[in-house]
Image 1 (tube, rainbow, N blue to C red):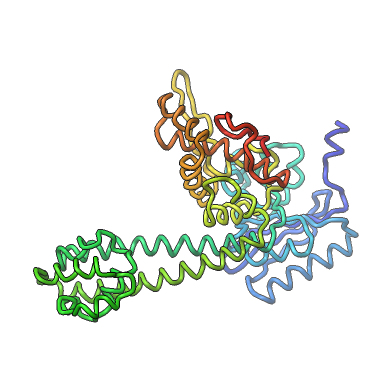
Image 2: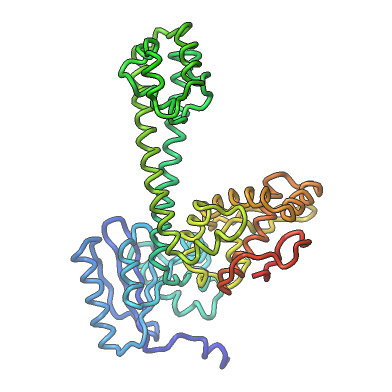
Length: 416
């Protein structure tokens, strides 16, 4: 009983709950004793955010609060930039896990649902979090993130979106090429080649590509004599479908769009490279064989701060390399947790594949899992699970990657 009392937050702290909306937010303020002090709405704009901080500052002074704890939904979403400004004030910020909050509301239902009720329920969580494990799981404190990691997160997410856009445009353009001009795509087989996109962009009419001269072809960046000769061979027997007159402009527009996307991606990668030099976390992750610039930058940006994770298993679950047991009776199975970071998971899995190819000992571990009946993906995930533990130890102890023994099947979690 004394231990429980010692774990309770001080009575003279200030607790703030924010129910986030797209344009308006509901705010409830309470004291350390759980009593509601104030509640109000703010707009998601300059005046509204200024009013939010002014009101809290007034209550902080009146209550002589020693600390301010703010819980809000939508951390990193509609809550921006309110959440970032809370951290810059030195206040404690908690993200409300929506999945776990929904389960909490099922177990402890309220008589009705409104934004005001939801905000008050979040205040209740502060009082319950030291006594009810589920309440503690709903409120997850956000550790301050370095500026370099915050920027890497934004840049790598933007880059991934552009890469996905380029893939979609490429697939669409390839289908249109096959319909409008059979044989043209066969010259390269890869529609996103720089020289091929430049070739398609030379003219506003696809049919006019058949009349390009040798000197014009050789002037295309990257085409060279070999592919220029292939284009000349295609020109001699080129055939266009009746739909080339309307599909052609679409193909050319997509080719030019892909060139623009390529330029934007390269520009982002240059910024990511520069920022990675300023991020100790990104540099440390890159010491793991197979973890390249993009994967390391994505992991650094999505992890943000290793202080967010109390143990290696928590990081492994966040990275999607620790499936949960989902067995029943004689059925043994597992499932992927719903609250993983899918961007970080993808970065880790891609890096793990390269790591296995680069490190013989890790390849042996991977092949051992395959020999045990695991699928390729399961073997990659098993390898990634151990790498997640190694990564946790590296970041916790500020040490670069180094296997403990060359004969180890995989570096130990404490190899750092």
